[in-house]
Image (cartoon, rainbow, N blue to C red; front, side, top):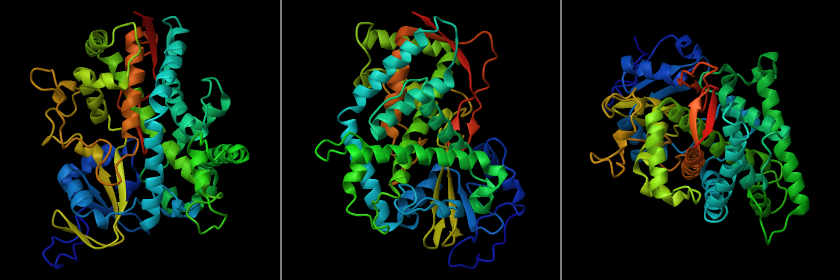
Length: 465
């Protein structure tokens, strides 16, 4: 039974999208809200809605057609991501994800221009250097079981540390370990359905002590870096994103988009927007090559044919390695690391014939799209060959494949995520045969869903080839 359709007499629409009357079906979201909402779409259809107590109407879009209708055909109605009462209490001005209007355009252009400058300069070199450090860490264990998840997260986190803070950290450095753990917890805790999003007073209760501690540690860490950068800033030679941000500050007017007080928030957004999705993609790639040894061997054969053993992989090699490329694409489809996008609606809009009123919140369910049987044959099967031509010599780009979003606010870290997956993955497979540790059960590879879907922790053995 669905929500009331009292607006059904609105011109030419079917009224408000159907959905569950009982909001507890949403509040009681289990480990994977992505799976929960996808199951609900099978009953209610590609567009459904619900209301949480005291919050606006929430509408979930669950396939390519309706997501495109929203983000491409009606893009001006969906200009910004959802800003919950909790995020408003933290502040949204100057945020990459939540700024409005012209502010959003300016801050996003600042970040994209900075990423482009670094990608064209030091980024490839730094990812390659970090891949070498990661291989050395694996090699030290001499084929014994390694707890891999944290190591891969730290390797990926170091790339964003270099871009934001101008330095990398040793894998045993307690500060970076705690920073990455704090980011991981924030992504897990702030998943859809967490009551603290709607009722920010909960943030200061004992129930959310770990959330508050994680947020405060990230804030303190970044503010200390900003203070150090201010003391050593050379505008003629910017070292990283913090320097670029400081150079944009004209004064200390709290109404200015760029100012010292909110600088930490912008840097936090830059760091987390790429680090956590990139780390999750890398974790899934390594877990899945351990699960599928035959596919690992195919990647190794491509490494041998294109790269050999005498040189290190280069990102340009990806275009000559169709199976490896298809494997990476299937990783991101099979375990959609960013399961949702969110938007707020600034005017009444009709999607799939349904009226979505101004002020509604939108969940863009990429997880459901990547499992849509109308698009994918056997979507629950991990099969890289779905992205290859019949002769298996070229990659097929499927326009319906949008694991990292679409439109003008799609994931800014796509190039970085692909670069890390390819360079870290091929460097490891070039040197090691990777297997799950025989001393522990294999991970279920279902995933843990917050704002990012991460792999369960697992141990592997890296044996020298």
